[in-house]
Length: 179
Image (cartoon, rainbow, N blue to C red; front, side, top):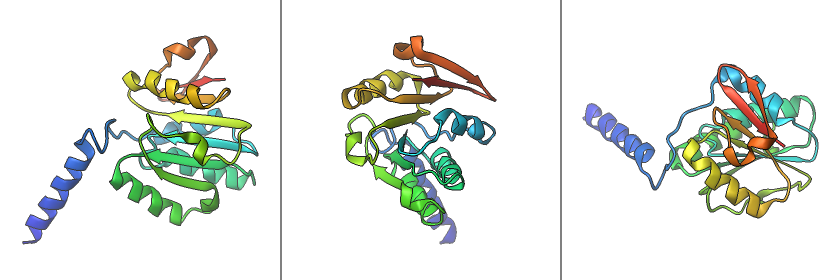
């Protein structure tokens, strides 16, 4: 009986993570060795809103929020995720985070969500992306419809439409920044 329950739970998790409706982009966490470089690329400051579109387990948002807390910065962090299992993980991690008051968890589709609904600060908008390269342009198009100015930090994949503004940070993987 115990084996059957474990099997059913694993099967449900596999279905959730492989469902194109619940998770159109596969879950691959950012490499922990690159997190300090990613946080540096975010250029954390007071009055900034940082979005992680396709936040996964939230490793970037939570580490960046920890750094902002350590530096006593008033920075808002918004994790957008569509996968219900990862949303649960994000909420559990937020519950025990020292900077939880500045972290928002949003269940939504990064291609359809209206990000302006979740910002506290309009001056400095930073978007962190670690998504499949074939979805980058669609995501940037959605962001450009909502914001006039914003920064983008893209992990591993270059954004062709922003190439002229590109700077590369080399870690285990490449980190692309766009102003």
